[in-house]
Amino acid sequence: MSKNIIKQSDQVIAKTYARFPIVFEKGSGCTLWDSNGKAYLDFVAGIAVCNLGHAHPGVAKAISEQAEKLVHVSNLYYTIPQTELATLLTEKSFADRVFFANSGAEANEASIKLARKYYSDKGEKGRHRIITMEKSFHGRTMATLTATGQDKIKQGFSPVLEGFDYVPFNDIEALKSRLDPSVTCAVMLEPVQGEGGIRVPAPDYLKQVRKLCDDTGTLLIFDEIQTGLGRTGKLFAYEHFGIAPDIMTLAKALGNGLPIGAMLAKDHVMEAFGPGSHASTFGGTPLVCAAALEVVKILSQGRVIENGRKAGAYFKEQLMSLKEKYNVIEDVRGIGLLLGLKLKIKGVDIVKSCYEKGFIINCIQDKILRFIPPLVIATEEIDRLVECLDDILGKLE
Image 1: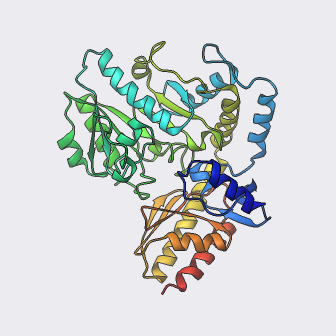
Image 2: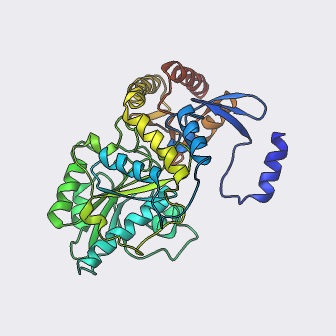
Image 3: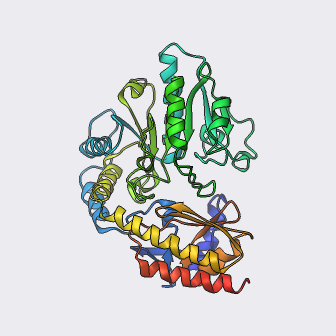
């Protein structure tokens, strides 16, 4: 069965992913089962998407009940789930208003458009450039891949769009030297870089960025697509740093697997988006908003995020123990359950070995093993992966 599906898939689906030879059929909590019935512990969670775990009963119920009532109308009309979700997101964050999209890339695209239009409406049409960080990742649309500070993402798509500048992450002096309030409309960054290598900034860096933006009248955009919704041990990563952005983007874990993105902003900024200025046919449908509403309600109760925070601290301790034991490990990094193990060698073979032993992990930037499991992960499940890594690394020494 699985061989036939793999063969068929390779014939009819665009080859934009280097897939593992595995067909997943079902999941529950932190466990996935393939079409042959083999179980795997999932430390990828759909790339930081399934924060509540697979097949969460509350989310499944919300989807089922909403699907029987109303799946889609149009944003020309009001719907209850969309209104309730936007209300809850604004209550739990710095923001006053929400724009709904279908993905993180679309949410970031909306933030780019909003920042430019904000200054255009103020009569400052020259302020259209956005500063982003080297090694950042913001999406795959033309605007968001241009915003992304990684050349490999842009290969083959030239000419990329005009209007973006790049500086090193966690370097306030570099940002100061590049920011020009006559042309810069926004600084856009991930509070913790995910795809760029699980890079946590210095404690005062984001405060310095916030002050610089305030002093120059520049908008601050936080891309919390990977870091948001409990991943770092708080509902939003910006809460760790004692500051808030003017605009924030969310996606990934918001729908626990359903496609939804959101751009949140302060009232005076979002005023730049009037009727007809931006839109999304499927942005914030009743179905996805019902699911996301249940996700945010559960996360807001705190128990799942607290479990993720404690599990992340425990996991990091175990990874540090491996670092002390094996010379091949260069660094342990991360916050909450956004963790990385930087190696002195390429990590692809370790990922494959873990897969063969029933563990799903992934590798970014060639040498960094990334661990982003559901926030409901148990310490005994972490222990099983650490034991697996211990065995694999021991054979490399």
